[in-house]
Image (cartoon, rainbow, N blue to C red; front, side, top):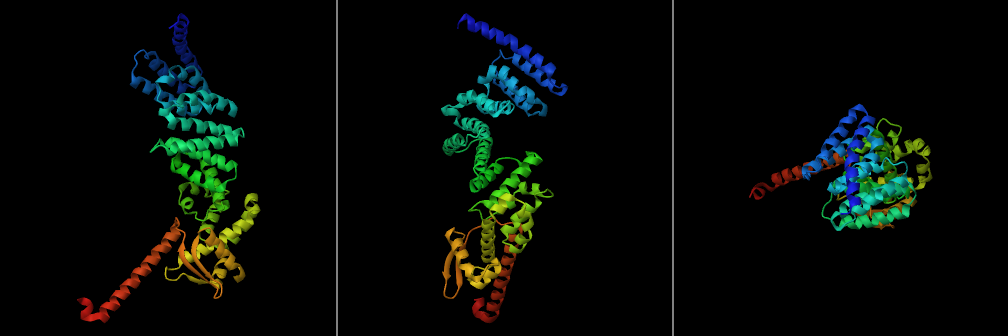
Length: 397
């Protein structure tokens, strides 16, 4: 080791405690004890104790969670954490760096800040952590309008994650959240809906701010309505995040989702004034009208028993409020997108349904299925009683 390197190391050892002492004086009184702890643990660093470095890392993470730590994060990382970052667990290192990056003055500064950290974890042994770092950097790239670059990052990270049997939940959460942000920027409602629901499966919704929950629920509701191939809202309707719209200005949107899921055209028409005030829904009114008709058709089929799936055009017209002449086109659409399977009898104007797309049911639909099972059970009991009475000794044997 050269003399100049030794000198530089001595200077760092000397300057870090002073830096921490200076920062402690600047910090709010209730945060000052963190800097005292940092200084105490750092001064014991001569003892290369894994437990000590772990404690120091945990205190940094805890400090960064404090609401008023924001102005200190970048400096603490650059002047303090960077000096012993090789001792930190790679996931913890990236987690700390991401907290600091969020406090940079603009999106480009955040991207620049993260590049050295990404390089440090781009190794064969830390590819899972690399995904976390590069996806969070992609979040800032989206802010800069670099959508093409973000899509390449997403594709590369998806392949990496597919190669793991399991990874930390936080890594999957990051991947799905940033993917959802990308698809939202591209108005890709179907892929946004899928990614956003997967993101919610990776996080505790109760830990989100009220504003974030409302925004997430609103975006998911709009994606469900506008997504070309989304005809089952059950998973969203049963998710607690949707309750965040209750008693807000978007409460009608929650009602609209239940209306669609139940195929209730009457309620859909009653909500028309709300739709007319939402430009995106108004622009897609024709698609929404077709979707509510299709969902009305699905619900009508679903309500029928398995042995009663031959439906006259006239009944479908009544359910969907279409003319009889429009029924065939509607059923053909349902068959083409695999909502139903069956056939159309054009001569007798009948639809024979052999299969209906499986659905995630909301509570009212589950209750309807319960009633069907009770009716079926009662019918079985009646038949059993009848056979017992008519069969006499033969049945008893």
